Length: 312
Image 1 (cartoon, helix red, strand yellow):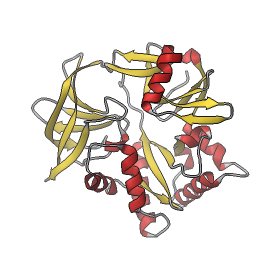
Image 2 (cartoon, rainbow, N blue to C red; image 1 turned 120 degrees about the vertical axis):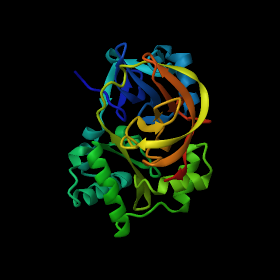
Image 3 (cartoon, rainbow, N blue to C red; image 1 turned 90 degrees about the horizontal axis):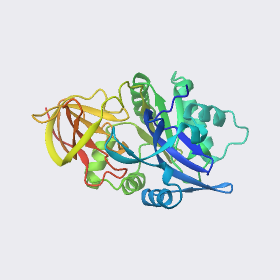
């Protein structure tokens, strides 16, 4: 059976490309979000509202209410998938190219640097525009890392390569562009402070790249959750070992809930064990009575955030 994972893309016969947002199926459908539409040989990248409007007017069969997540998403039945774009396979195709373009050349150089640090390229993939060949000269590189252990090794290696001047820290221009793209509910200075200590992004030949962790997680769709309303809490992080996972999870000490779950990359790796955090999100209760706070209930996560307010 084909396995669909977060960061994969799936394409329909209509030339619609959706980013997979959840491992596993719900009602025989892959949970996803429309990202690109094909026009002849060209790709159009779609903003959230554009994507929703297009499906509503032309392809309503791909609109979906997830009972498990209590959320409106997009979803594609397995039978309607014409192409399954997989990051691992795509990376190998690019690495073998005879005439790579400029962004592909930067990706290849980055992979060679990592390979020189004893990183197996079989543990890596590439997502985003490069996954379907929709990149342009200003595109970023979205690297996928399969496995938590290798991901954290890579974070350390990124720091070492920056220190050796083989990679570069993001400069002011790159940070500002990243912040403006995220449209997050943090101040610019708060955003940069949190990001700089993650070591999951840097520059290669002045091009930004990101590391994205994919770790197999059982039971994602086993529990259904119902939203209880928006709330803001402060809590102590007691376990941050899943902080970079997708979804990111922070176990917390709080009288109303046991964990914070995050579906937006902006707040992945946002806090460490022993830190006090303030979180704005949607309070949810599972079918078994467990409570959690969800950040990223919508794609933009407007009004939702995680930020460190103190550490021990």
